[in-house]
Image 1 (cartoon, rainbow, N blue to C red):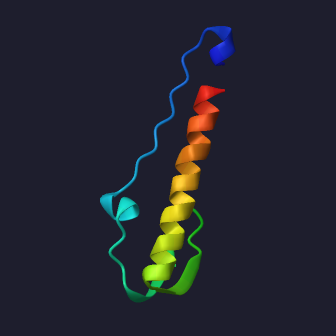
Image 2: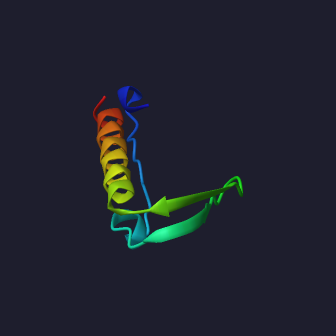
Length: 67
C-alpha cells in the first residue's frame, strides 16, 4: 500500500498492565478472542520472558512499517 502512495498506519492499543505486568502467583488467563483459558504461575522469570517477547513484537512491527 505504501508503495502505491497510500499512508500505512499501525495502531497497537495496550493496557498499562500489558506494559508493566503486576501479576504474581497462580493465575488463569482468558483469551479475549477465543475464550481459551490458560492456567499458569507468574514469577519474575515469566515476566522477564513476557517482556522479551513483547519487545520482539514491537521490533517486528517497526520492520513492517519501514518496509
